Image (cartoon, rainbow, N blue to C red; front, side, top):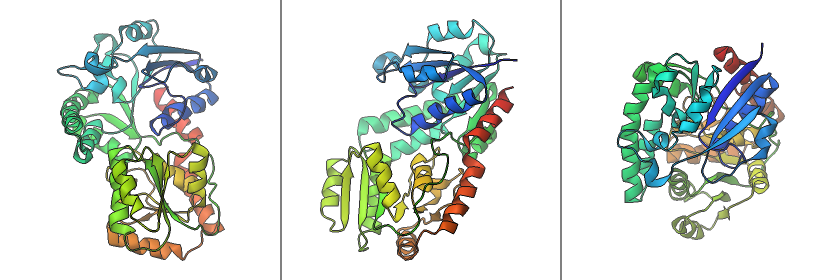
Length: 372
């Protein structure tokens, strides 16, 4: 019996050039390898139509997202109201195939009477109201801070409303617990789909510590500044900060530090080389929402990794990297690991742990089992 599945994406899931695209894109290939026939629906607002997606799907449809004022609603969160499409509704009603909605963003049709008895599954990227609340706390722009707070309030009401209406698959066990406890939802943990198939970490020692991320994101800039001011302020080891679009403020702060180097806007190949050559990837997070793909990347490609509880909460990685929550704990961990080579035994142990949780094939089988 053929297994057909509608997948609705919040954005066009190719090219895979930012973290949010990893789970969306690599899930397509994993499902196709298991024989699933995918009918893909994408909201397009700048990334364009991508022929690459045709390799994995029976058909691909694109729908314009109503951005700006046209997408605002007095009652619905913007991420949802801006992605409502009558054309998508009509197309989904042509058959009775199950539907996978990628993100709360794509769940607007859950409130339509035609989908009351339809098999609908939602991939949770975050507990969105918590995510937007945390964004508001680190945002400096008054307008963006107001918007994030408003979006958080609307999302909390909305997520409670849709909780009983679908089967939810979270990228972290913590998010699944929140949905079950607070929103009366049927929610489970399904690991994120990733491009890495094996741990490629080099044994031996590197010559520097590395923090990497999209530096135009307020949370990442805050983490980089905290490391500069509180952790590496009196450490002599070379420290590299690498990422997209660093602000003038961050550039100025880095220029004052004798042992700190900025690598602005590295290409993917250069970034992977930095992660691979670093002795320690230092990746604290001040937002516990979702899954930190840069930490996964560092664990598959890099040597030692140090994070904090917010960085690993709910994603089964706390045994794969050293945890340090305060500046003093992080300083001490860095000093300790600078003296330790990354050994073949460490690599083997990490490989076993990562494969046990983050194998795409096993995740695809779990997903297929839940749907069919």
